[in-house]
Length: 141
Image (cartoon, rainbow, N blue to C red; front, side, top):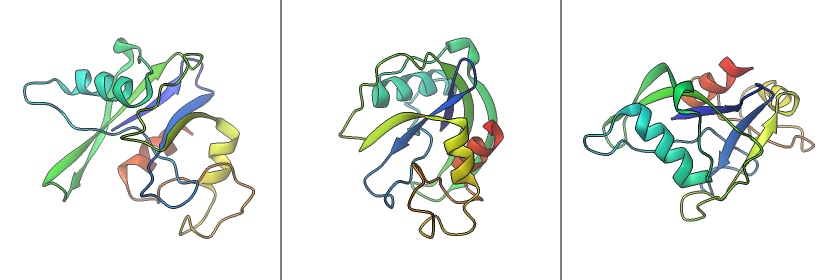
């Protein structure tokens, strides 16, 4: 699971899954293949799901979280990429993805409690506090 930001730190790449409530976007996540390094999995998953090539030297471990399905762990990373690269979203994996600015993500981060109770004027909603995806986003903010 990786929080990809623009090289200048002004935007974050967030993905939207159809299973999430309307407007909820999260960081890119995937699985590590057998024999694959975590850093390589981060690069591969981001490219496969969004078409974005992250800067390999920027991949940095942040933290982890136990995950009950399928009896695994989420390993959290930060990385940077060129935000001018056109997105090529894998619609078999994601409903959509996009680069979101610091201010619109900061506004979404102020939503207390359930993300389902929010200002309809917000462009994006975030995962709830307490999950690694949100921790990665909050650490960027």
